[in-house]
Amino acid sequence: MITILIPLRNEYENLKEIESTFSANFKNIDHEIILINDFSSDNTLIKAKEISNINSNFIVLDNKKKGLGGAINLGIENAKGDFICIMMADLSDDLNDLKKYYSLIKENNIDAIFGSRFMKNSKVTGYPRNKMLLNRIFNFLVKIVFFNSYNDYTNAFKIYKANMLKSLLPLISESFNVFLEIPLKTISRGYSFKVVPISWTGRKKGTAKFRIQELRSKYIFTLLYCLIEKLLLKKKNNRDISKKL
Image (cartoon, rainbow, N blue to C red; front, side):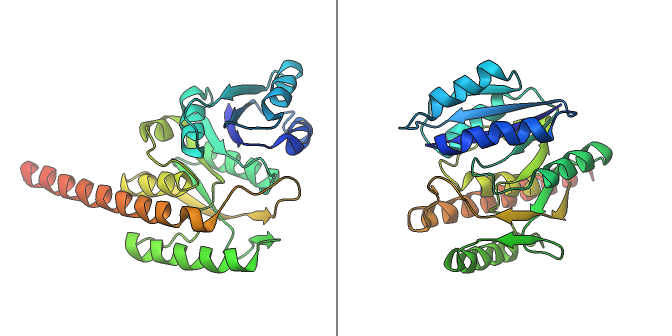
C-alpha cells in the first residue's frame, strides 16, 4: 500500500479537486491519503473531515505543532503504507508521475525515487521567473556542497520506503526546508535512490504559502545541519573501518 501525505493550510478551495482527482485516478491502487491540517484559519479542517466521512481512503490529522515540518512529522508517524509519498495540496504534481514513482520503487530494490523538474523530458509550467532563478542558484549550491549530481532537492514531490523515511524522524525543520532535509539525510545516510524527470504546474487555486524572504535563512540552516551530520557520519564510518582493520 502507498500512503500519500498532503499537508493543508487554508486549502479549502483545493480539497474538492483533491478528492475527485484521486478517486478517479487511484481506483485500482491500494492507498491511503492523509490530509494533515496545519492550523488553517478557514474551513479546511471541516471540509477535510467531510471528505473522510464519505471516502474511507482519506484520513484527517490535525497538526499539534504549527508548521509544515510538524505536519510532515505527524503524517509520517501515522502512515500505514509500505511506501510514503509527499504531495502538495495545490495539485502542482502530476498523478501519472506518482503512479510511475510507485511502480519504480516497488519493482526496484531502492529506498527512494527523487523527481526532478529540471532534466530532459521534465515539463514545468507556470513557475515564476524570480523563484526559478533562486531555485536554480540554491540547488546548484547544494550540489556543490554535497558532492551530488541531483538538481532538485527543494522539490517536495518524492517517494520513499516507509521504514527508511521513518528512520529519519524526528525531522527538525519547521517549514518548507523540511523538503530539503529529507533528501539530504537520505543521501548522507547512504540510502539508495533513483532520479526521474517529472512534470510540474503552478498553483491555480488558493494562495501560495512559500515566502522566499522568510525561508532563506531556514534553508541555509538545514543545509549546514545536514552537512555537519554527513561529515560526522563519515568520520564515524572511518573509525568503524579502522577498528575492523
